[in-house]
Image 1 (cartoon, rainbow, N blue to C red):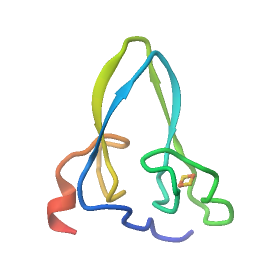
Image 2 (spheres, rainbow, N blue to C red):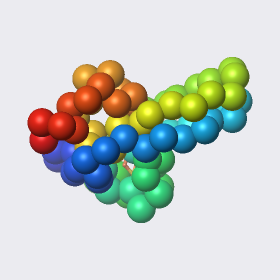
Image 3 (cartoon, rainbow, N blue to C red):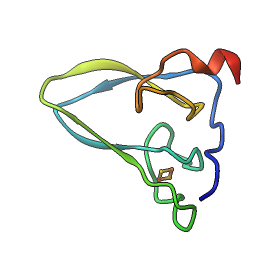
Image 4 (cartoon, rainbow, N blue to C red):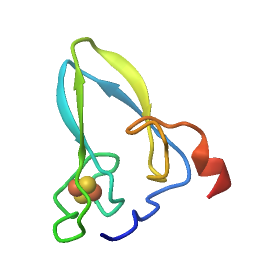
Length: 78
Ligand code: FES
């Protein structure tokens, strides 16, 4: 399995509508912070994010968070 690529050293603030999303865990997506299928062959798979309510979230883009898919501040140390 490859190591995740750092997509950015700051979180993505996004307004999620009710629904299901795929958070990019590999860092290769060109549609950050969401999966675009670029993880194929890496051994890394996206994380499913489901929400029943509309809400603003901060999604990790350094891909090193211990609280996937949410930012936990780890980007400050990578
Ligand atoms: Fe990164 Fe799918 S493109 S997990």
